[in-house]
Length: 328
Image (cartoon, rainbow, N blue to C red; front, side):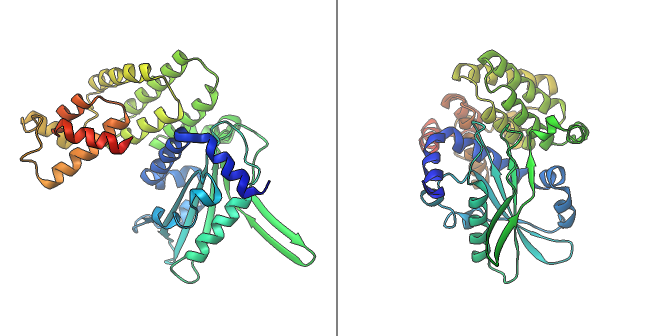
């Protein structure tokens, strides 16, 4: 069977869960890009000028790597950054998520194909495409980092930097780096490691692990803008039952009370204090309406019920129902 057919067949197995985990990783990369680079790829991080704007080009990737072409793309992000030397460079980061810890035989061949396609589509002549990989499986021997074709005098080679998340558990130097790290990416790595550790654990153990990781987000003093993507990521990589998802919502409320950091965005808290949110969207400025819908989508992802979302955001129940239908 050809590599493309194998990849395409594999894409049918992951379903919604794989898609959600990919989405979780993509959001983490975009939200904490600078910290991710600093913790996982420090050499490349030091070459980037983070005082200059960067641009995520995910829309550019859709025609390059469609699902019906190469199969499951896993979590891949393309971002344009400016180097300290003053030149522009595309850094194409592929996050390879092995949910079942099954190494992908043709991973590097796919990486090579994507790398060339991005290079071929680049908008600026001479701009390189740099491919990186983060491996989240638990196979110590699975460390693909090179694609090579040699025949007679022909020699084609692509070697990429990789990070094995399990090395933060297996190797002392990586463990020490993780222990010293205090930012949100440290929580991301801990959650990924915990998900691997609890792969075969019972429901109660998984629930307690999720609760403790979320509690750690609040203990660390992260802002509400940082906590939300972290909570989503934790819930997506460590799956719990629908019943426990409801329990978790109640626990989050308790945790917020302890740390005096409401999960709701500051504009919502202020509006509630002033009595501006009363179950109606009339009177809210256009920007407030947009923010209310964004918050409603976030709460839908956390499985809050429609009545509570309507009360919190000020949107009509019918509007929340429309958002729920689009979300599903």
